[in-house]
Amino acid sequence: MGSTVEAATEIRPFQVDIPEEALEDLRRRIAATNWPEKETVADQSQGVPLAMIQQLARYWATDYDWRTCEARLNALPQFVTELDGLDIHFLHVRSQHDDALPLIVNHGWPGSIIEQLKIIDPLTDPTAHGASAADAFHVVIPSMPGHGFSGKPTSTGWGPERMARAWAALMGRLGYRRYVAQGGDWGAFVVDQMGLQAPAGLLAIHTNMPATVPADVDRASLAGEGPPSGLSAEERRAYEQLIRTYKQVEYARMMASRPQTLYGIADSPVGLAAWLLDHNDADGQPAAAVAAALDRTASATGELTRDEVLDNITLYWLTNTGVSASRLYWEYKGGFLQHQGRLGPRCHHRLSRRAVPSPAQLGRAGLPQPHLLQPGRQGRPLRRLGTAATLRRGTPRSVPLTALTGARGRASATPTAGSTRGLLGGCRRGRRLLIGVGLPRRDANVVKLASRLEER
Image 1: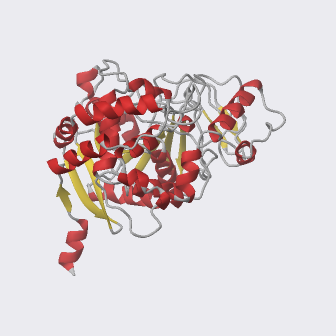
Image 2: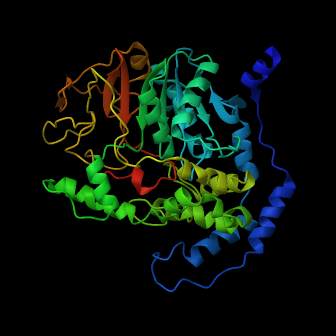
Image 3: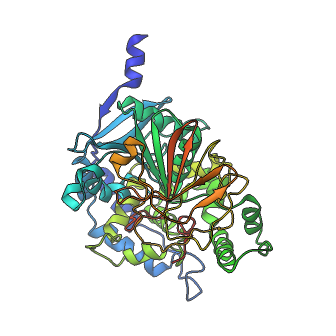
């Protein structure tokens, strides 16, 4: 019995080693693609344009080198451990600064740990990037179940709630007694649940996809109805963005209802690539940021490149996780943009973005309802949650900024210029739990419009 328990909690080193035969098969399948005719419209309203995917496929089959990505992954400490009966693959990069704050980072769909590689060095070695040792983090980046090199669930139940419990267990297994969590896209749902579950040791969460839309507004926008009465001009503009979002999520509806039917993305690399490309952002579908990357061979300022897009797609192909990753949409039965629950009694909320025009009342669910979107510009840095050292102390330095007031009290903003970025701060069950919301300055994630609902 003892040896069985030890095996289940063992943390095993991991290295990526894709057989050359798998790469040869990938190239052969791309070359053998049975192409359809060209779309009958001049825009992208029918899906990924034929010329776009053919150009990408030609490069993928002839010049793209997976081994470069493999070497980048293998240069980092990778591990596998069993959590709740499933093998979970993760990166664990410790900072050279002993007092660094542990941070677990959650990816989304159609993403993977690959999209987080750029953030590791600035977070673990901030002094090399113009910041101080107080901004240092020990970084943990798990692959979600059914994604990448993690195990594929063989039964139902692996939704954000279960992942949240698993990530808390992972941080405990790594010996971290105080830590913070960050998530974008589906990772945002996981950190939402971590905040609600409030496991021992969790000091703060940061989300790229704030679920702050009131339930009645969300229901109306899902149904395509007109905006509720009494909205301000800014809120009406936000409502129009919601309407547009829900008209561009056919891929999500398919995965949420019939993920097993997507056999084509397990059999055709070009089919998989088109499926992963055809999500939306604020500027288009396929996502404009991703479409632009297909013509970009390098970037000195952090934008996506063609190889980075293909790194992510190729990981899905080589691990055959197109369908297994899609099942997360089926597992999740909640809403996508409405609030996820109360923060709890005695919770105070601090705002640290650009000041809202006037104080707002906290809504019934404990989140600010008058503003469907917090004002901000996509791409602006958020430096307002506090340094790693500040979070450890639990004593963020207060500075004047527009306050949110509500029945449970009021609080001022708490910005300090640290590596984490944030919007809301609060406390839970008698201890401080900070909650940050926003978009990183150079987010390499392949993100949907739902995570970019802020004013451009």
